Image (cartoon, rainbow, N blue to C red; front, side, top):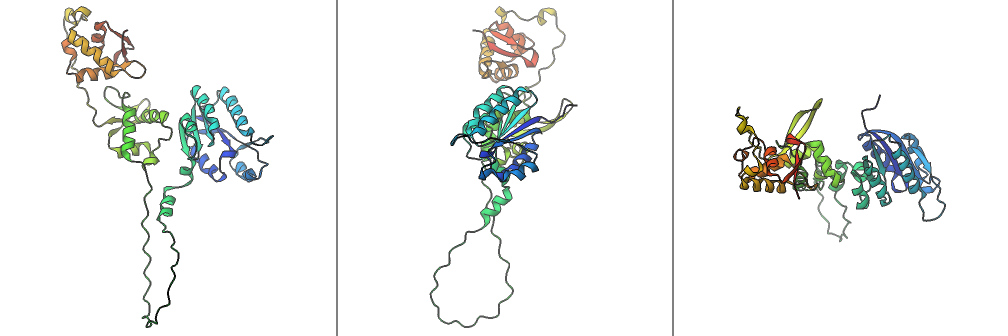
Length: 370
């Protein structure tokens, strides 16, 4: 029976990973899916990798020994890339986890993504942007190894001041017996610095634009997937939030709703300023003469120009405009389909003779001819 979780291959560059970060990295990977291949590459005969032996057996990681045949050349990178391509062509995996801070794996990440597989990167904050952006999602190991409480406690400890030189003082009368010592007042912890929520709200709104259905609702999972496709580092903890839903709620820019989806339920969101279009009343039974689509010549020129302008304004990056977005632009101009003599927006667009259309109903897409 096929396992429900996505199958992942974990490939680790030992030369660019600290030993103490291995356990939290593997814990984070375990939340992404089912790991079926664990391999680590390096020259374990060298002193700085000698301590890996016990850690690798603890996590059942298969070490791939690569001797350094010459100074300055890293044979581990080549071995990792060759194995990654072999595993890719086996078609047994849904994604790869590349654990390294080396930009040499940038092309490997993009090649894996070209085959439609997910790439999860793990590295230090000094990792070059090229490798970070080549991954679908990138995790900084510093955030995995240090909890927010540890950061707060560290920042809350006051720095020690060196003792100042004390001049000899005149004799002082003996002090009265000391009372019970007062407990020291704990230092107020300094909150961890986070990115401002308006920055997250702007990114969410940019991704939301063009995704919304006619009623404005977008699946939360798809919204964050679109953001991370262009910003792999975008994560709720950067803004002081624990999850995607927590981030959306704190921005106060969207309404959240748990709605039925396929065989279960999932969360959808809608911008608070979204204007829900009024439902068009169903037409009563009419004669055939009225129900027939109007000819191109009979369509009012003002409505034709408005329809073509609405298509132009709703056109996305792929050159096509969704029918729902066209309807919103058309309505924003103060126009109505009722005045065109057609019962639907798609019929009115077809009657112009200047619009190319694919799909049908609310799933239709349009673009201007020529």
